[in-house]
Amino acid sequence: MGIDTAIGIASSELRHLNEQFALISQNVANASTPDYAAESIAQHSLSSGGAGYGAANGMVQRAVDQQGQAAVLAQNGDVAALQTQQAALQQIDAVTGAVGSGSDIGSLLGALGNAFSALAGSPDNQTQQQKVVAAAQTLAGQINNLGTTVSAARQSAQDAVVAGVASLNTALAGLGALSGKIVLGRAAGQNTADLENQRAAAMDGLSKLIGVKFLEQPNGDLLAVTQGGLNLPLHGQTAAFATSGATLGPTTYAPGGGVPAISLAGQDVTALLTGGALGGNIALRDAVLPGMQANLDEFAHTLASRFDAQGLTLFSDASGGVPAAAGSPAQAGYIGFAESIQVNPAVLASAALVRDGSHPVATGAGGATAFTPNPPGGPAGFTGAITRVLQYALGSQIAAGVPQPAPATVGLGPAGTLAAGFAAPADLGGLATAVTATAAQTSAAATTQLTGAQAVQATLQATFSANTAVSIDTEMSKMIALQNAFGANAHVMTAVQAMWTQLLQTVP
Image 1: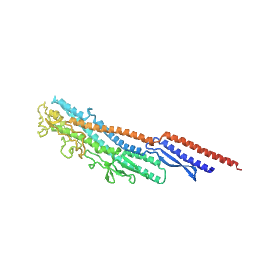
Image 2: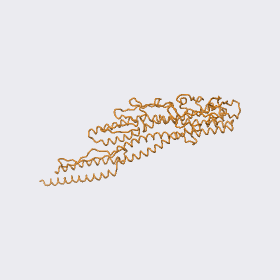
Image 3: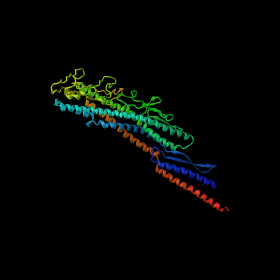
Image 4: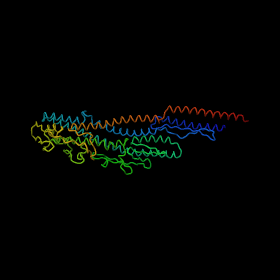
């Protein structure tokens, strides 16, 4: 081997070693960077005519566990959706109160019943009459509070959907741009590992926004498909998905009922966008929260109707009437009533009506028995209306031996597509408990599912990281090996330099 050849081999090897040192430095610097896969360079020997003349670096490779990555990304979508729902439902929990807590509608209904029981012992006591009215106001106020809280949460979900669609478009454009660069780089024989690590981070971000799985194509491009089977456009469209902002009222519903759809190329694809924060908000807006609203509306209407049926319109709308129950779907006449129910203005003006009753009742088949209110100047100890409230309005029968009309539990909501999630209770107390418990169970289920999903996510992430993430120990071992190789090649350069120096000194 000539001196020139030795110098060429050593200098080439030092250049390649420097590239590997730089890569190790990059790996160590990104050891804690999420979604960064350790990069490495494979060396291969060079030879000509059977004689070796050094080594060269190959393409930079990423240590990626493809199956592990797919599992982590899928789990990200589940966790993000549950986190979104849990956050919204816990805010409602704080207002609803636990069954029997004193602030829940069941407890407040019980307090109203106790006030009527106390009034029965002293019907002409004006202070006690006012206590009945106050208890009724507290109950109506809590129903209003719950109704407006659910509506506000639904509006927040709608606003988050609009923001989520904008984020989705931005994420897809960024992911498409990276994939385009990777395709071009591979076609040109360039290293694309750094771009692939950047794309992995973008994939992670998209997986938390919407449930999605990814399929890498042979040319390095990417195919992204939602859990609902929708191909997500990565190229050519800067704002592929479209929706619009809206103020949602109790009568709006999806699809086709005033809730803006999410469209792609003019087609409604809302139902195909599940999982992730965006999917979680869609579920809250279109199903979970409307279901809670329907249950509250049903309780409010049943409460007002059962008092009214006994001759005391204690609860009403602003006009002093009880919304009609006739219509299709079942709640057509009283959608949103939970937000507007109040104590009858006539009762507020004359608290004595809680003793006397507000209107006569005629006997009807399957209904209440006849009732005549206490006339002006009538007996101060009149208890007819109070007895009917305690025995029937708050009880399981509308008249002796006649069951109360059952509250609606199916065909609920403005489109008649929702269900209560429980069997129809016989009395108001049971209905109040069922409404409160169902809301609490929905929230608790989200929390339980989230805890389990996060545990699975942590396990999957740990396994994926063990196979993919940077190992400082491994990088240090590589560093030591490279340092030894660097020293050997540097020694060759030093020896060659000494030889040249000695040679030059012998020349006269």
